[in-house]
Length: 498
View: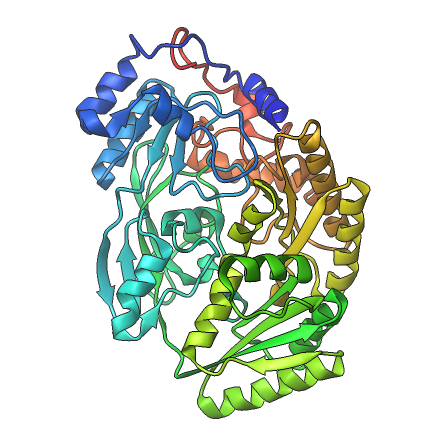
């Protein structure tokens, strides 16, 4: 993947020059607009921000800015525009598709210090927050008033709401409640021109085009979010969590399909195979069975009477599909333990190997079992260990290829296997991403999912926001279709930012 990033940099004329920031007028102007300590250019800071949580490296950061107000973000954008410099927005860096990797020494705008919960309107169920607010911190803040923020990525303890907006993030409980886009009412954004715009609104039917909807999921290519109005969701009056154990992943997947076919939409339907279940148990002792081929974590919420009926129906469907055991969490402590296991699944693989590559394709629920069998076969073909944990209710697969990056040639096998997993998913009628975004990871596959006309219109939308293609360049839209190819993005000044 380092080779891919290098080719992208060359294509965009983004190869950096020598190893010094001396003489770069941008740094002085940025410091004047912010402060000395919030514009950094030391090697350690730039190296730290040259990658995100993905397996992709090869990024090169320029000046790193930590704004604390919309006015400061606006000043950064205007300085970048005046000097024809590129911009990469960044939150907590938990992204898994390389979306926050800086290509060609851009100005990196880190919004984590913009972390205020500005206002909560319980009557209208709206909270205004800054982009650096950590996802789970908002729910914790709301807990005392009986509300929560529904999108709950596995990284919710560290990921930011601004990052959730950028990638239209999901999570286990988005099956019933919808992904981030369904919970964003309005966005204050700073456009690449330096102008401030309000997209969407709090009216039931905001006037004009849905530019809010276009911005959510744009992965930082259209501008920088500075304030977000999110919908807050009342806590359900009752919740019931079931753990169903099966001998095979196919039985678990078939159970999920039949639950949805029966007209139920539970709050969550999550499946883990035996390999990841054992890893989780070794890691946090969550209470999962080690001998099951797969487990299904099903949760229903709502009125007490209705969830009893739904829980019984789910148990029956599980039994009809050869469930070994159906267990209901006895209390909130047991329920929390089961969810802790699910939410820490990715961290649990560190016991097995230091690295993993997590995919994010979506397939029709009816194809889950067949695609999973093909994924196991692909891993065997490349002599790799794969573990499967996924949002089964909406068909969002998360196969983990677990490996040690120090092994010679391992990354070539990992990326080859990953490529086959993507194509198997597309062949099954699936899509490239459910919640992690395209970034650089899935960019090369975009023309396998979209027609040239589709990609042309996506590029036109981007140019409407960013005519110079200076915001998060080299991401999402593939080679041959991006305005970056046409306009040949600005070079980094000679002698600045290796």
